[in-house]
Every structure is written in C-alpha cells, then in structure tokens.
Image (cartoon, rainbow, N blue to C red; front, side, top):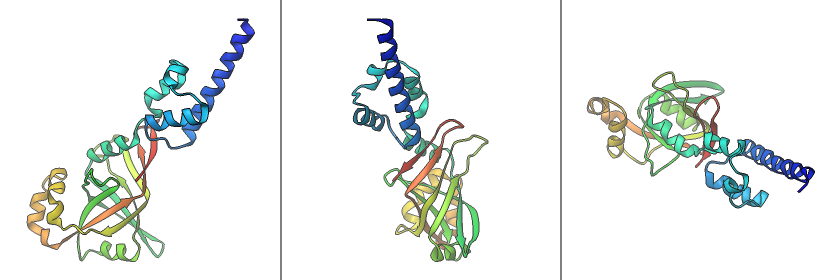
Length: 207
C-alpha cells in the first residue's frame, strides 16, 4: 500500500471519528447502548470500540461523554435531601427550600410534604408549573435541576410515604409526631431534568 493510500484511509477514519463526536455532543444520549445503536444506524459500524480502536473517541467514551445520566440522576438525589422549589403567580416568582424523598420505582417524581394551610399550597393550585434544583450538602458541584415540572397533591398520605421521608431526612420522625396531622403530600413530576456531574459532564434525562 502506498503512503498516499494510508494517509487517505487515516483521513477518512478521522472524519468519521469527528462526525461521531459531533453527533454525541449535539444530542442527548443517556447510555452506552444508545451510543452504539446510533453509530450502527448512522455510520454502519457495529462494534465501534473494535472498529475505531483506542482513540480520542474511545477515551472520551470512558471519561464520561457517554455516561448514563439516569444513574447520575439517582446518585445526586441520594446525596441530598433538599430542593429549592420555585413557583410563579402573576409573573411574580417565589422559591422555598423543602425536604424531599423519592421512590426508585417511580422515576421522575419527588415527594415533599407541606402544611395544608401554607401559602405555597394556594400557589400550586393557581399555577402547577414549577422549577427546582437540588441543594448539595457541601460545596460540591453535582446537582439536578428542571424547569419542566409540575406539582400536584399526591394520592398518598403522609402515613403512606413516611418511611421514605424518615430514611432520607434525619429527625423527620420527630417532626411527624409533632405536626404530621397537618401535612399533605405533594408530588413534583419532572418530564425531563438536567444533571450536572461536574464542570465537564452534564446531560439531560427524560421520564
């Protein structure tokens, strides 16, 4: 094979690698399998790691471009027990911090409790569209946020979900003993959320 032929093949390989990287960066792929399916469909490469070899592309795969952001979503939720929950009535925003819990069998839903006479309950009735962000326990970066969520009164009572709250929020059992009878449970339903892992890795998950 002549050097020019080798150079030509190398150039074509580089073009494919660049195209794959551009596709990954411009679209939301939440798992390695989605990446593999995309590469096979758009580029005709069935086994990209074997076909491309250990290149900048596969290094970036390993370093997080293709990380599973749903796994990171739950990892962030497990690292904190508070969210800043924002509402808006008549174009006037309001935000408050609430403790939350969640059930892994109902992904995309967060539970929180509120005194049924609290002002925010009225706001939920007037406008159910909300935004939220998790609040890290420390100065670390990872967080989950969404501006595409709704809040609604849950069909569950505080008794139904109290074990989830007690497991997640220290001292919540004492709070329930004191004011449990005044609390209603609410659900935040996020259609999608943006997960920030660090300064270089972030992605969107949908439910």
